[in-house]
Length: 362
Image 1 (cartoon, rainbow, N blue to C red):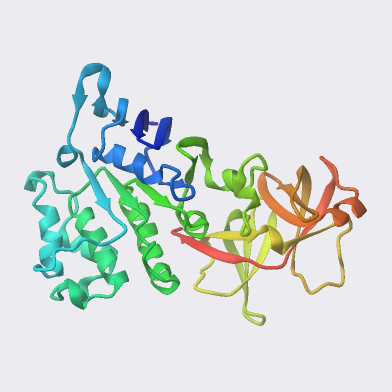
Image 2 (tube, rainbow, N blue to C red):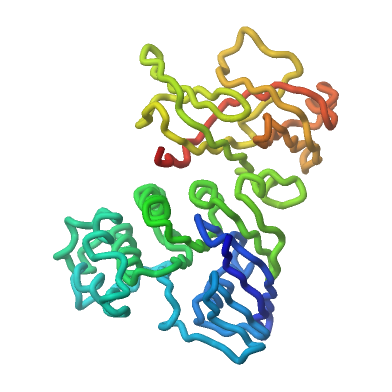
């Protein structure tokens, strides 16, 4: 598989970013970390907005920078779409005009995505005659994404595109971002410091801290690694991906099958065969060494303890394996002692709360 290869150094008077990594040339890759970690700097290096020292930026077979060969391709000649935190629409153009401006960047014979296709994917057909100052924040950002998409890019770069929006507007836009990747197959490099967004969107995750790459890997694996800080956030979570296999209309429950067993969900907009992504927070998983019989908790999964890590305030983070799917459970140190938890011990995970993050096609 081809990849996006990035190498170089970016220096500022009080800051330095060093990177050398290879990322998948498909799916959604999140650059995640706190403010000042280097996420946006790395994204701008890919875009050519800054030039890293000793840099190599290669997308598949296309080289955008190679300092050993004296090669640097400017931003406007790189086949990419860039979406900023603020929409940056042209105030004198209506929505159609803004999108057509993006299309002017490329020759007609190079256009793979029509204006109509971009409009349909972002659900903005009813906004085409509107001026930017009449749009909500979420609408502006959808137009901004459509404008970037209209350049028919090989890759989309998004620098915290939802940061300025409230939760309601974020939830409106997330499905459109998922749809872009699923239906067009255009890879997305996505900057965020919001774990909820990353959990929902990203297939692959790059964790940055103070200008260095801490780790990179599949999102589900990264979130549950006890050697990384992600497992100790207040919202520490695991991801389960599975398929809806049954619906109980009497109790309004859907049954999701995944390699570790079955999960029962409140019935939503799910059809049999639908692929779903769930986030399960560590604080919502309790443990027992014997399978409970009389309990209100429906979701009980057989697991094995694969890791233990003490936290502050007498808490322990427990890493669990459910037939290849990793889970986390945050319990008290006393509970861990009473249960005599150790690596390899079989336990039952009782899941009390579930967030439905993403619906995949299929």
